[in-house]
Structure formats: structure tokens, C-alpha cells
Image (cartoon, rainbow, N blue to C red; front, side, top):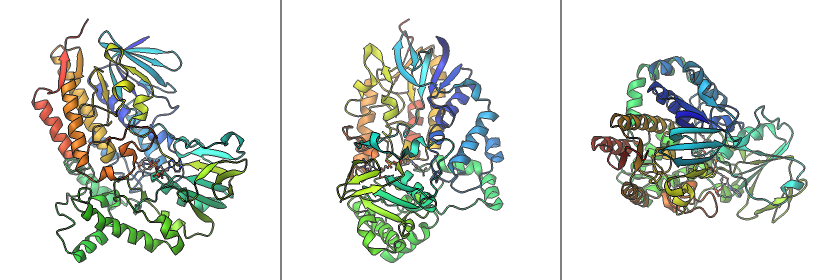
Amino acid sequence: MTEVDVVVVGAGFAGLRALHTLRERGRRVVVLEAGDGIGGVWHWNRYPGARCDVRSHDYSYGFDPDLEQEWRWTERYATQPEILRYIDHVVERFDLACDVELSTRVTRMVFADDGWDVEAEDGRTWRARFVVMATGQLSIPKDPELPGQDDYRGTVLHTARWPRGGVDLTGQRVGVIGTGSSGTQLVPVVAEQAAHLTVFQRTPNFSIPANNAPVGDEEDAAVKAEYRERREAARNSPTGLSFPVVRESALEVSPEERRRHYDEQWPTTGFGFLLSYRDLMLDERANDTVADYVRERIAAKVTKPELLRHLLPEGYPFGAKRPPVDSGYFETFNRDDVELVDVRDTPVTGFTERGLRTTDREIELDVVVFATGFDAMTGALLRPDIVGREGRTLREAWVAGPRTYLGLQVAGFPNLFVVAGPGSPSLLSNVLLSIEQHVDWVADLLDAADARGAVTVEATEEAEARWVDHVNERAEATLYPRARSYYMGDDVPGKPRVFTPYVGGVRGYRRILERVVAEDYDGFAMTAGAR
Ligand code: N01
């Protein structure tokens, strides 16, 4: 058994930042990472076309002004290889690799004697006072359960388990199942390589053009000249993106003015298009204006009118499923070597030796790609056995859906912290910013516990119940629950249907955290421990 102060689980953006910060505060830290490389989601998701949907300058660490100045992003939305190069740079610059154990999958954690016993799949164990779960929100890939996969003679891939060396799809007949952010990014790139591409779509998606472009020297210099202000503005914004806050309702302007505004926003804002008016996710009529606009834009890109019935998203509000940010997705269907199969009309019934079978016919494929997403938000937290006070597991505590205080702690699981998890802005925000906020906050909380001689820190049941009510109330006031989405737990059959992230916004959440500190860490019990 190895003794440390803190075990951090996961070596993605969150785990690496936790390692750096907690080590700077004088704690012995080890990061346990299941993958054979550093980078978390960016280590695994190597599919062609993968890139971030937040501007590169904002999708980066803000804790070190020198790091900010020295790194040069080449594209507005960085590709996966570039993001991984950035992560490698950070790892080297802050000497992080020495405290990361790769190929180490945590399978069990038990709270005992005021600390945690942590066990890995290979039998190695660690003893730590604190555990930080930096396991990500989208890290357990989901495969559709299709019969006959063993009989299939072709290749099956998942976007989130893409082979390291890449895959040559030149001249291949490729099928892609899933049209979320991953499928939407992948499809145009695969269409360029493959002999024929079949896209299996279940729910048509609203997608916004990324309008990616190289970052010119002037643009880079302009961001860097005001980087500190840009970060501060992002911290005080609803989403953590550096867009100006819009206070207007979509309904208080004339249709002409609204249209002008959407026309201006559409080509430049990417994911921020969702913020064009303050009430797009609050008022159905406001949302209708933007949903109609996006449908019109999609329709204008598609030259085969018979496809529009399948490609236009209907029946749920724009933004209630996370909208992809794409580069030429809809235009791809104008190609003669690309076909759309609407699985609502003709469901896929399984694999055959030569491809996939739908209720209509057999489709021969050399490669089948699952772009079917993840057991989101809670998957990675519920996979290991996490055993808290009195032998109660996290799975038992969350049987009706995730319950946290501030998204940071779960009552009955002392000294265990979650980064950017359920009950925090998480995936509704620029997650990099939310990660850094959580890590700094937890680091301060641990220091505060030390300062008062406390051995354990634990969210109280009462504070957790209050927070869960607040998270639910805020979500119910929005349009989010009106779509089937992974925000609502619809990604996995049988998952409790509750809204998982916190919709109160980055700025609002930050104020709540500040208040909790000002009120002497209200809702956290700090005790001298049982030893
Ligand atoms: O996963 P998803 P993703 N049969 O869950 C379909 C981030 N991300 O990997 O909508 C047929 O969004 C499913 O259909 P439906 C980003 O936060 C970011 O694409 O459930 N289809 C859907 O179309 C994103 O939101 C970037 O009806 C099935 C798709 O598969 C999150 O990751 C890039 C099916 C899954 O979409 C997840 O994105 C990539 C089945 N059995 C990802 N099961 C950036 O740009 C599922 N589907 C930063």
C-alpha cells in the first residue's frame, strides 16, 4: 500500500490541474489514470474531425499567465492532436508526469478510519486522506446493443476508443451510427475518405456552424494583450465563454430586428449562438424563433429536398439537447456517395456477416463506427465500488439520480470530492473554467480544514437536500427537460430521469460558492475525525 495525502482519479484536464494545485499547496498527490496516456477525453477521442467547440483561447488553463502567453493556438477550434500537444506541454512544463500512474483503473474505494483505501484493477492499493474524482463527464463510451456483432467480418470502432495510429478509411464502405457532436464532426471528414458512407440517424440535431479558421498573429496578439480581462469576463458570464451577456428577450424585439441579430450571430458565435437572447432556454415562444431560424439555415444547406423531412429537427427545443458545432455536416448529405438512414423509420436490427441489417434491408459495410456517445455525467462515478460511511455505496446513494452538495460532495462520503460533476455547471459551461474553479475551491477548503485541525470534511445531509431541490427547481424553470438528452439521463435506458448539471450559470454558481465560504463553509461539516 502506498500512502499519499490525495488520490486523484483521472489524468485529463481536471486531474492534471488538481495534481498541480494540490502539490503546490504541499500535499503528496498521486493521479491514477485508466488510460495508457495522459489527456482524458482527448486521449481517447481521436476520431477524425475531433475538435473542441469552445474557442481554443478559452478552452485552456487560466491559472498561469506565462503559460497563457507562451502557447500559440493555430486554429479557433483546436483539433484533438493540438489539444493533446497542449496538454503534453503543460505536463512537461509543470513536471506532472512523475505523479501520474497510467494504465491504473480504480475499481474500489472504501472510507475507513477517516481516509480512503483505494484499489486498482491490478491489485495495487493506496491510502489517502482525500480523494478527488476527476473522471470526466463523458468518459464511459456507450455501445448500442446490436445482436450478431460477433458474426460481423468488418471492423467496429467507437469514436471514444479510436485507435492510436488512426484508421485508413480510404475506399471503404463506412457506416456511422449516431449524429451527436461526435458523429457530426466525424461525418464530413469520413465522407472525404470513404468510398461510401451511410449515416444512421435517430434524432435529427440542431447544429451550428463552427466557422473555424486559422488564428492569425493579429488575433492571437489581441487575445493575449487582454487575456486576464477575458478570463475575468468569462468567470463572470453565464456560461464561462467570453461572449458579452445579452439582456434582451427574443420577444421584445421586432421580427426584422431579431432576424438581423440572428444573421449577425450565426456566422461567428458557434456554441454561443444559444446565448443570442437571454430567454431562449426559458420561454418556448422565444425558443421557437431561434429553432425556426436554425431549421431555415439547415434547409438552405441541403440540396436534396427529400432529405429535409429526416434532417430537420422537430419536436424539442433548440439547445435542450447539446447542439453540435459542425464544419460542413449538412452539406455532406448533398454528396451522391453519402446516404442517410433514418432509424426511426427503419431501425437497425443487428449485424450480419457483411454489415448491418435494418427492418428494410441489409447494408454492406467494411467499417461500422459507433458515434453513440457516453454513459454521461454519472457513468464514471458509478463504475467503481465507492463505499462511504456505514458501508453505503455511491450506487445506493444515487439510486434515484445523483445527489450532491454544490456538485462537489456527497453526504456520507467524507473527504471525497468531484470535479465538474452532477449538480454543478459542468457541461453547461466552458468546462475548463469550471474545472479550474472547482480545483481551486477544493484546495482552499482542504486548507481551511487543516487550519481548524479537522480531519474530515463532509457535506451535511441537510445542505445536500437543499442543493438538490435548488438544482431541480432551476432546471424545471427551463426548457431543458423537454428533450430526451443525456442532461436528463436519457442516454442510458433505466437511468433515473433527472436533470444532472446545474443551470444557474457560471457567474451565479460562483456567487453561491463565495457565499458558502463567507458563511464559514456553510453546509460542510469539518470534524476532528473518529481516530
Ligand atoms: O454523444 P451524444 P457524442 N441507435 O450522446 C445516437 C461532447 N463532445 O459523443 O439523440 C441509434 O451527443 C444518439 O441518438 P439520440 C459534447 O458535450 C464535444 O456525439 O439519443 N442511435 C445521438 O445521435 C457532446 O454533447 C465535442 O436519439 C443511437 C448519438 O448517438 C458530448 O460530448 C465533440 C443509439 C450520441 O450523441 C457527447 O457527444 C464530441 C442507438 N442505439 C463530443 N444510441 C466538441 O465539439 C445513441 N444513438 C467539443
